[in-house]
Length: 129
Image (cartoon, rainbow, N blue to C red; front, side, top):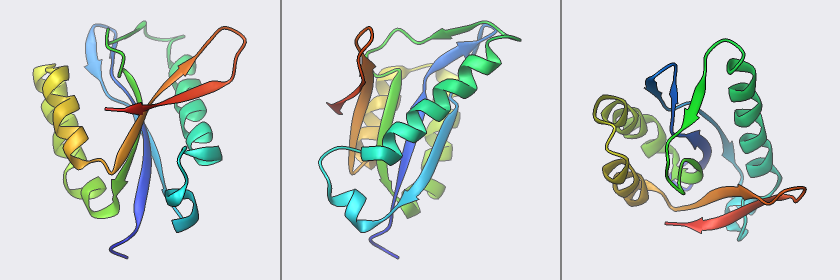
């Protein structure tokens, strides 16, 4: 299980004037972890998170944090997912220090991508950090 990794989509945003960091994740197999791009699991996680945010925007205004890395997909070792990610999330929610959050997340992540889309184009994953 030491080789297990978890793919996590996360968004840094403000919901009703309060910082929020919703996320969605799933463990991935060795074959998916070996590929260059996050593949269908990455697409599914990113789209699922975005749909959830869109649905929530009916009740509360949302504003993304002004950062190229406000929507991320990261691959984390499974043990880091449960041990360190909750503390990173709590630290960012309390401080709002996006640069510190990104540095700490980059130290934990095996690899990561920003999620982008050109008008009428497919989702694109750009290597991060």
